[in-house]
Structure formats: structure tokens, C-alpha cells
Length: 105
Image (cartoon, rainbow, N blue to C red; front, side, top):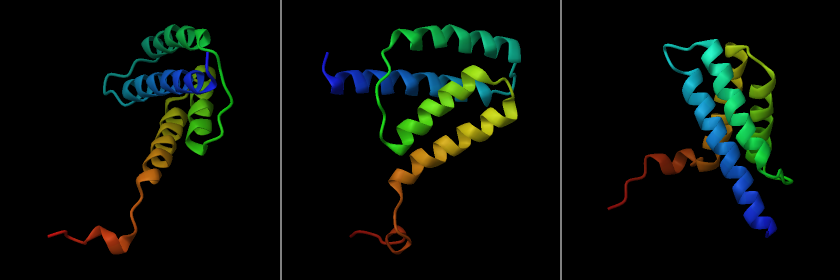
């Protein structure tokens, strides 16, 4: 398999896992036991995907977040890590202040 294909497959797997975890962390009816079983079930799927070298800052932090979720149960710490991950992802679409109010006609 091509390196690019492997990288895309790995990143898609990490993204899918991270979105699932973040969505379940932010639920009102959060249950730690159900959350842990969900993480373990989806971690088995991640093991099947071959890991590749990641050089982008967002991709590295995504991988670190996934490993943190697998290792730790503390909801507050996981939410903080999830928020910082989303902040890093949103920083890619940053616009300068001078262009924010500009209206095109």
C-alpha cells in the first residue's frame, strides 16, 4: 500500500475515534462505565490500522489525545484535552482581524 493511502487511513481512523469520544464526553447522561466499554471496543478497531509517522501538529496532538483517552478515565482532563484539540484544529482556519468585517459587494 502507498504511504499516502496508509496515512489517510490512519488519520481517518483517529478522527473517527476522537469525534466519537468527544461526542460521548459532552453528553448530559455521561456514564463512565458505558464510556469505557465504548473506548475499549473502538480501540480494538484502531489496533487493526497500521500506525504511520505524523508530522503535522494537529495530527500529532490527535494521536496523543487518542492515547490519552485509552489510558485515562478522568472526564475533566479528557474534556480539557478535547477542547485544546478542537482549538488547534480551528486555528487552521484563522482569519486576520482586518478581514473579518470586510463585506464583499
